[in-house]
Image 1 (cartoon, helix red, strand yellow):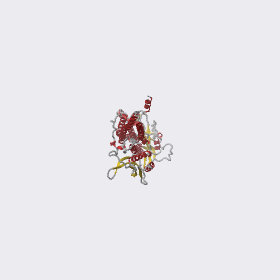
Image 2 (spheres, helix red, strand yellow; image 1 turned 180 degrees about the vertical axis):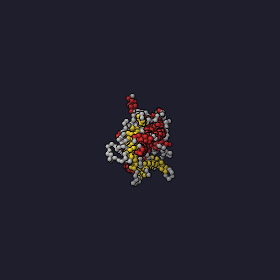
Image 3 (cartoon, helix red, strand yellow; image 1 turned 90 degrees about the horizontal axis):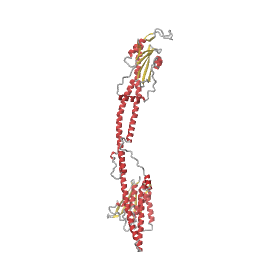
Image 4 (cartoon, rainbow, N blue to C red; image 1 turned 90 degrees about the vertical axis):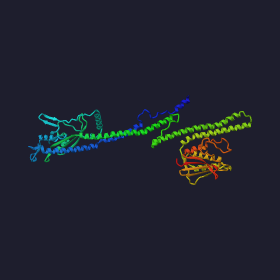
Length: 567
């Protein structure tokens, strides 16, 4: 029971897949929407600032107001003056000009009232001592004065429009641009000293200022003021100050901003639709691939198929193709494992059966010679089992070793020369043993990336196989050469050759086709299979064929190994 508990504790917990059937929007769709909408919102936010456009509108409005103020000042200087009866206070009569003029308060009020009838401009007229003579917003009569206050138009819009305007006002109020203007304050007892423009105009200079207004109960706005001196023959008779609110400027900016917002609304709708479409073309296939992969992981059959999106020709198509190939390779590996297990069971069962029969028989045999032969059979079967289990163990570890090891440069020419020297030292003094002849082109670069120990095992297997099939005193020819980006090595013997149609079968596990007269059980049948596995792990290939003589008969077998010079 303890062992079961330990095994379960080592299992990795199953992570719940990120895709959930009930979710309407995938996280990828939300991210795509957020990035696209944020970029569009930043662009529109920059357009809504309209700082330079507002400056141009203010300049144009100010220029028109200055022109109007000059016309008013000229008209007042010509038509609302009268001769002064005495020089101004503090001025020496001897130094006073011959003709002295002053503004006529009554004429000035009438003219100001007539001049502003067709405009919405507030006009105020100040005397040289700073007194307010006329104000177009104040009507003076026998009953007193009447203050004219401009009221905003009645709001007849619907609730939705008012909400939109309120939202717009809140957004535009957060946009900087008016805090740099001075605050305009209306004084109850107006005098020229309270208005810097009027003071400068009384000094003979033209002056204009842009103000910001902040009246209780009203939205912050703009106020433009212009003051022009009223002159007669270079004599300053007063100052006329014109002021106008920035409602027209605000309306023009609002109109442009609403146009931008309309375009933004259309662009936003298009962006959202395209983002949802784009995210869908990415998220939906990935979700289908994830679900299919999850079904493959948790399923018990092969009826689950990975969707094929390779026709898309993009990264998702590549991912689909890779997953399909990986799944096919997984099933192929599982099939190979099943076949390997069945082959191992079959190969081990044969010597075990022979061993069991010999053990059961030896106890009932009294003849020493027969007993000795049975003990020899038992020893051979044990040796065969030991060799078979060792080869199976090596073959089972081969995949893991090849996947973990790091490839290094291997000189195939030097390796073959070393194997030739070892073979020559081994067969020295045995004239009937087959010889090994290695041919390597001088100066040829036969270096390939690989595992030197495993590649040495391949060529040892091929040379040992060729030697075992060669006749006494025969020769095994090994030739290495460079063919473009490939190193080609051939191992040829002078034996009976490969049975017709078995050129591919000899690389299968546990396939055995040994020379006549060789002792049974001395080979496990895994040598060529392991050699092919090693070569293919190095991205190479191995093939077998028969050598033919002039009559077309088999004159031996030749194995060809091709290894790429670059991994």
